[in-house]
Length: 165
Image 1 (cartoon, rainbow, N blue to C red):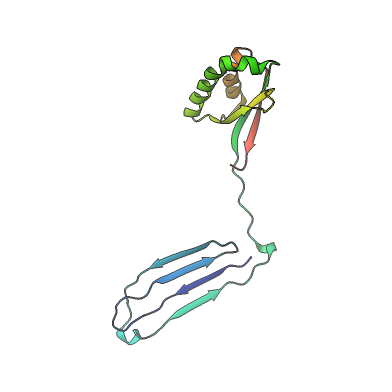
Image 2: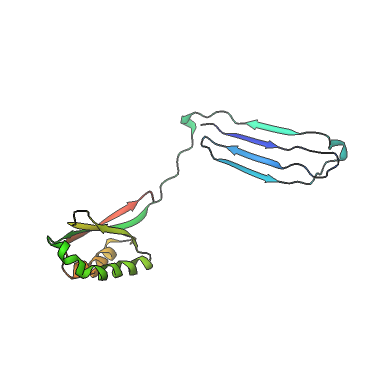
């Protein structure tokens, strides 16, 4: 892991009261470089106007053992609702799909719904919701038109701590 730090100031002309940009550059091991540039008025007497001043400092190379630790992950609570559909779900599902999608859309507008969908073989589905506790997700499942109308033969809620988003 290598890091360097450089400050450069250059006086361009004896006829100008303005210094060139003062550049602060911090390159890291990645390709990211942060650069800050500002124009400064010359506070120096005219006898320094023809000078070119540069200052550069490099930090020593750090080995991996001294690399700072990564920040702790932020956990966001989500609830998974896992549905098992009845055997003839492909035939029954179209009757209640519009109601189910309206129910999901309302949850999305409230900021509760993250994502969901049926499994490819249509033997069930899964929903991801933002609720702090499983009881709220259970109430949501009980009100889902697929559950109310018998398309879902069994369901369960699992608390899921999402680390990466």
